Length: 218
Image 1 (cartoon, rainbow, N blue to C red):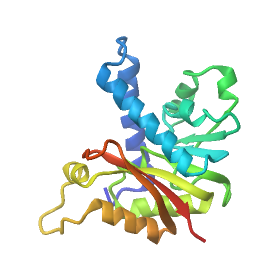
Image 2 (image 1 turned 180 degrees about the horizontal axis):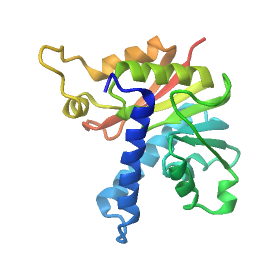
Image 3 (image 1 turned 180 degrees about the vertical axis):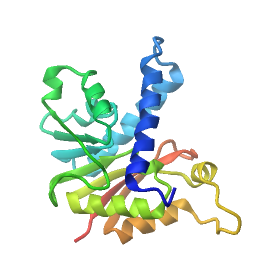
C-alpha cells in the first residue's frame, strides 16, 4: 500500500464504505444489541474528543461517507460543519438521510483529504475518524497529517488501530522489525507538527482502536 497514490487509497476506502453502507441500508432489521452498544461507544468517544478539542465552532468532517457522525457533530447548535468526501455519490446519498433544516448546518463538497480545497487555517478542527485509521503507509499518513496541519488552525481528531489489530491487518514482511504501531504513529504526529492532547481507547483494554485529539504547534 505504500506505493499507492493517494487517489487509489481514497478510491479503495470509498468503495469499502459504499459496500458497508449498502449492506446496512439493505438490512430491514433493527440494529442488534452489540451494534447499538458499538454505535453508542463511538458517539461517546466523539463527544469526549470534541470536548477536549474545545468544542470547535467550525469543523471539517473529512471522508465523511454517509454522514454517520453528523448528528453528534451537530449537537452544539452554534457549530458549522463542512463535510467532504472523495465520492460525490456518497455525499449525495448522505444528504438523503437528513431533513432540509438539519442539512442547512452541513456544507458539503467533493474532494481529496490529501489535498483539501480550503485555504490555510480555514477551520478550527479537522475530524477524520475512519480514513486515517485505514491508511497503512507511513508516507501517506504523513501527507495527510501535513495537510491537516495546513488547513486546521487548532485541532485534529483521528483514530488509530491498536498494535495487535494493525499487525493482524498489515502483517510485517520477513525480516522487518515488529515496531509498535502506536509509537510509530505518535512519532508521525510530532513530525507533522502536532502534540497529543488526549487519547481514548474504543474500550479500555480492547484490541481495536484509539481516538486521538491533536493540537497544532506553530
